[in-house]
Length: 75
Image 1 (tube, helix red, strand yellow):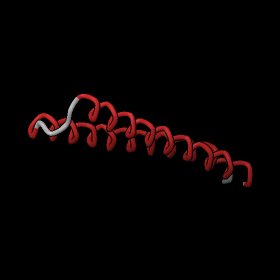
Image 2 (tube, rainbow, N blue to C red):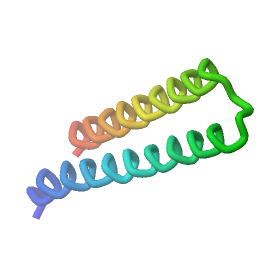
Image 3 (cartoon, rainbow, N blue to C red):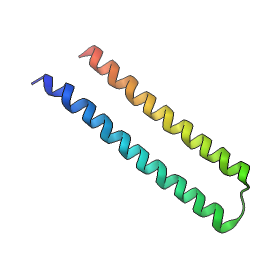
Image 4 (cartoon, rainbow, N blue to C red):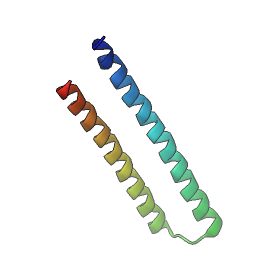
């Protein structure tokens, strides 16, 4: 029964990474929609917001893989 964790664990991690990617694209679409409609942000601010979002995505994915590895080590 313990071997199922080696199969289900990576599958769940990939599933959560797709969910994170999907919500990130929704966030970017919302930011772009607001920027296009209200004309309050310049190109530099849009690039900055995109960079911050990409760093958050990288941090979340790195943290997910760290805890996955730690969980497999301790199991």
